[in-house]
Image (cartoon, rainbow, N blue to C red; front, side):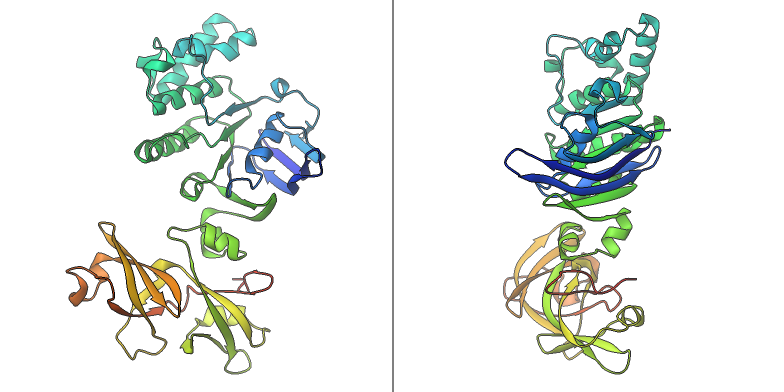
Length: 373
């Protein structure tokens, strides 16, 4: 078993600066947890507290039901992969991977067997006799991961391990980490500021801001049902569009939204979830892929003018000015009206509607999602 439990964890630095506040998380055996958020949100500090590299100010950390607040990092049975690789330049790849096992006085035959196995899993067998300077960034990162997994740790911690790689290598290494996860029996805690990494790797995502947990859920849960405006805007590419709007009651439990004087329909499921709410000002959120073109005069049509058109191959990202706001539409090329398929120019007029089942409504003061589905 490789469970991790963080109970009411705080990190308070000298001078009273609080980096992490009341962090609570139960990580199951062999679960892949991703901590994600903008720079300075406390995610790396939390990881370093699990590793024992930062002292816990308040709260309790358990690894396999053992209280580990005061346990030395080397005695926690964890391994950590850093952003900077942290390889010894004077050692070969094999020697780098052998090093932590030699420190633990593992028998030589077992060291060779573990290193060879890890190298095969990671596809670096042919590089075992090279030094780090002769490797690419992606190969060095594989070596750093290999050095961690040869220890067969209960928990593998990864602190932004792909951030130094170019976009193509990042995509390749994400796939390698997914494969690795399927081949080794350990629990992963992974830190990133890249929401694409979080969505593709995680069993559950922990979204953080200013030291506080904003939401914990599966990638699908946090995408479909963001708990507040921050999560809604952070998860998804391009980010969710937001409009000042008004929630209007049509009957006892019947609602629609008003955006810039246009009545916007809400699905029956959303109306049911709003039961008990009165009329109020709201912030309406809609993802770029949930906006549809519509003929002029269609009920609930919002109008706008194209400012920027980004051709992405199979789809367009259209930046449209509507009601004084920049609205982003994500439109598959095949969905464009016939008259626009030759190209979309600056100043082109647009009419569009919102998918009634994909609308989010947030309270302007608390910024919480009013819809709990």
